[in-house]
Image (tube, rainbow, N blue to C red):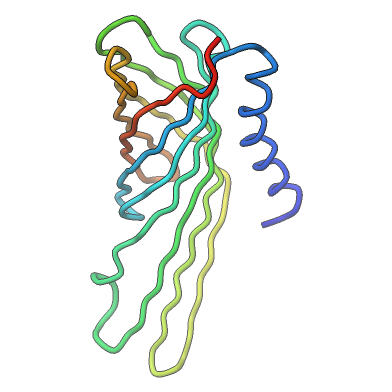
Length: 171
């Protein structure tokens, strides 16, 4: 990763956690699990803060665990890895409803690699890039841990995630 881009991603992810407490806003953390049509199972988390009523800034990270059993032939060793970090702006239509829908947009930095080994010959392909994405979801704010389900589309693929929010700092 180029140093300039790496610094930008770190600054965006850290900015949510640092700026929200300075602004006196509530901060929450969320463990989450998900599935991507291209990358398989995902585990990760997010940190977010409400910046205005109904408007949140969220930093998110996911690590994917692709299914390697369906790739390649017997005798071919296949290894795939993928991860992503994103910064999202989310608008919650009515945070006081029992079932609160939301929409948002964001930018993600993703990195993936594929390694294939056949008869001691190794081929590797790595890809990385920054892509915009759109997202939408439903949150149940009246339940403990405020569970949510979210679908995000971008870079020609979709990712669905579920999780629960825990407040780290209240207003």
